[in-house]
Amino acid sequence: MGTIPTAQATSIWNPTLLVNTESFNTIDEGDGTTDVELRFGSTGNQKLIYDISETRFDFTRSVYIQGNVTATGSLSVSGATVLDGATTINSTLDTTGAFTTDEGITINHDAGASDAVLTFGNASGNQTLTFSNAAQQFQFSDTVSVSGAIVVGNYAPGTGTGAGTIRWTGTDMQAYDGNGWTSLSKGGAFVGLTSGSTTGSFSTGSLVGYQAANELCTEAFAGSHMCRSAEIISTIDQNINAFAGAAFGWAAQGPPGYTSNSNDCNGWTTASSTYLGAWWEYSTDNGATIATGGGKGFLVNCSVPQPISCCR
Image 1: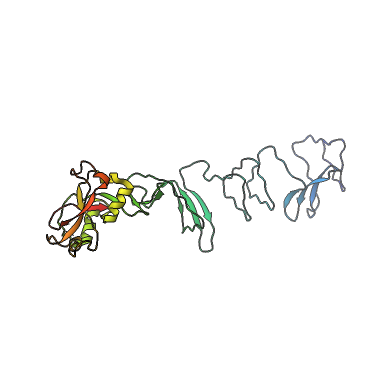
Image 2: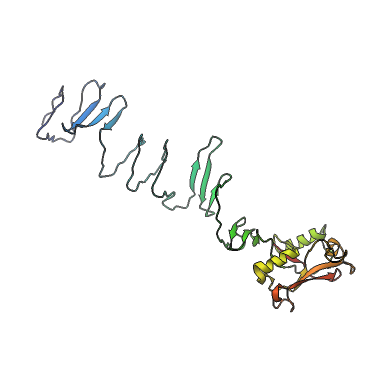
C-alpha cells in the first residue's frame, strides 16, 4: 500500500479510510508554523488540535479514557478537575488553587512505619502537623490557638508514661506528671506517708521546715509535697481509698487555729512540747481499715514523732 498523498485542503473519507500499516503517515508535512488538526464529523465538528504556539494537544470536547493514563511529565489543569474514582499519586501533588474533596483524605495510605506530615507554607518558615509513628501521637510544630472549645476525654496511661497529659474523668479535670494524676479542679490528693517518722522539727540536707517536708515527700513519692489539711479533705471527696494502709501523719494547716503556739510546730522547725502541730488520723486500727468518713484531724505537741502526709 502506498502513502497517502498530501492534501492541500480538508480531506473527507466516506466510507471509512482503513490504513493497513504499523504507523500512520505524517499529518501536515508543511512548514510547521500553523496548527494541525483532526476533525471528527461535519455536524459535530469536534477536533483534536496540535497547538503549535503552546506546543500541546487540545481536545475540543471532554476526553474519556477507558484504560490507564501514564504520564512521565507534569499534569497541569487550569480548570476544575473531577476524579470520580480512586486516584493514586506516587509523587508530589502541587496545586496553585484550592483543593477540595467531598470525602476523606488519607495520608500514608500504605500504613508504612513512617511519619505522616501536613506542611503549611509560611513566609516566616514552614510549620507542620505530624502524626509521629514512633510516639503514636499528633505533634504541632508551633503554638496551637483554639477559638472554640477543647473536649478532653478519659485517658489512662501506664505509670511512667503520658507525662503532661490532661484528662476529664467525668467529675474531675486531672493532669498526669508521669507518676500519677493530680486534680486541677480540686487540688492535690493524698498519695501516702513517708516511711520514716520525725518530730515537728523537719530537716534534710540544708533544708528545714516546710521545704524539708516537701523534699522528704518528693523522695518518698516523686512530684509530691507535704499535705495541707484542705488536700486531705479533698481526697476524701475524690478517692477515700487513697488512705488505705495509712494510720496517721503530720499535715500542714498554716496560721494558728487555736492558740499562738498552734502554728505547724513553729513552721516545722521545733520539737518542743510547748508547740502544737496538726496531724491527721486516717485509721483507728493502725492502717488496717480506713476510718469512717475519712478520719479526723488533731493537734499534738511537736515532740511526738510521726510520718509526714504527702499529697500530689
